[in-house]
Amino acid sequence: MTMTERLSDIEYDILNAVYFVEPFENILKECNEKEPVIADVLKQLIHKKYIVPMKWDEEKSEYIRSFIYDSDDMRAYNYLATKEGLIAHNSK
Image (cartoon, rainbow, N blue to C red; front, top):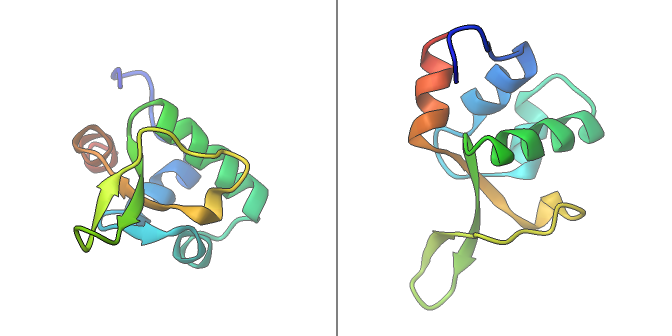
């Protein structure tokens, strides 16, 4: 993120909601915005590498990074802020 590029309020709220692995439903509850808007901004944050989608791995009994995700089914994943996302969030 450059110094001129600042997080919007909704980007900030979403990053605030994913300091720990969170399901899409929890992000919706924490952010005061409609679901399509949350989904679109979440996709933008994933594209910026500020957030990663996570999937539960039954074998390992832990969340693992999902390098491929279905952008039409955002509820199928959990989300976590990356180091870059946390830096952007904390610089606002």
